[in-house]
Image 1 (cartoon, rainbow, N blue to C red):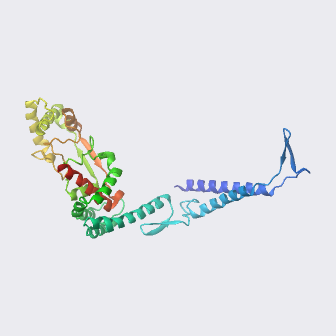
Image 2: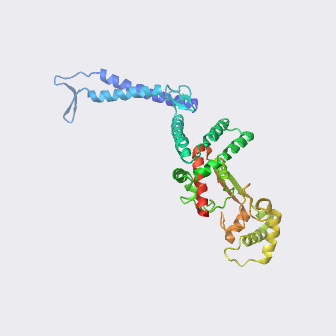
Image 3: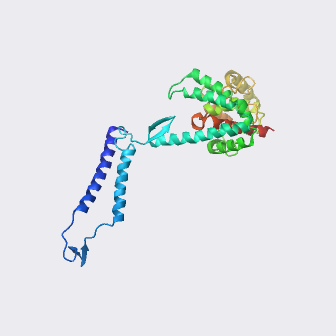
Length: 355
């Protein structure tokens, strides 16, 4: 907050407090001259005005609010917030810091996380036979604490990713534990269902997590990295390079690769032209066998699973204009323990479907 607005709020708040307090004191001390019948001499339509003292209960409440307001000024950063931090503190990251709404929220979240982490380590991991994960988590937390806001450190991020991968065997154990699955399901519904649906079957542009088809890999370590770091996927627009006829030809070839699920009458000439274009432009990402690459999130074009639709118009649109998708990172929002439970639940979804 700027100095002007801090000063404006301070002057307005204290000014109003002093004015109201002054008016009340003046009113109590000022006694009008009364007539013999104890009226003020004022008469309105024949109704005379008595001078009666304010009720004590009203005075107690009113002065109480004045004292509370003064106490608030002292306890919290309400007077020149940029200078006066108040005397109230909360604990954030193990340190006492001045009270603010943001600091109080962080303090409460950290307190809740400590309770959750204690239960996770002492009960959930132990019941799943994965108690050894606490050593890996301790090392991971230590590495993450070394990150500085707004600063990129590729070497440190690589170390963090390697440590995340070490949690994979314990995620597999959690995937077989009923209690861990219940918690993972709740976490999924709270955080992931908005995009992937409550049944995890996704929607147009949002992957189905039950079909065992993975853009970035479905092993426990790959799922962990996806949830931890998020993913940013994109496919370039090809209309300018290929022209409209090239777009249609490439789409015709892709439809043939996937088995022509919609039983289109494919144009053989366009298929042949599309094959040449595919080999010249698309194999870099999708591979010479068109089965994609989990390293970069390039989809398999030979199956019947489509993220943005597999009909002729949808395939042409994907090639013509490109596609883009973003999954946010969840490490800073959920923490390592919750991500382990979430990864275990997601992994179990595809395994159940596959079985």
